[in-house]
Image (cartoon, rainbow, N blue to C red):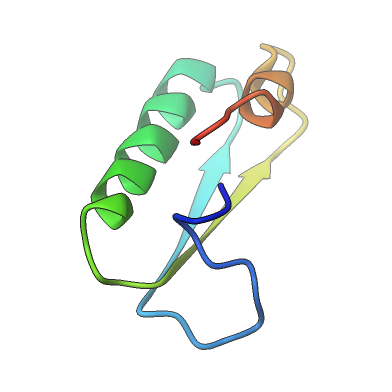
Length: 68
């Protein structure tokens, strides 16, 4: 996510938190749309995804995302 989403402790224009429990496909779509929107703007952003011990592979799928 480097280059698209700031990873510092600065103040962001947008902060979003996504809660996930066995919603892998929906969560992945949400994350991708968020990143796409930020990429095409001049806004700084942070995105936090909280996975509540999903058993559908959500955490593994999210860890495998690459936005470069």
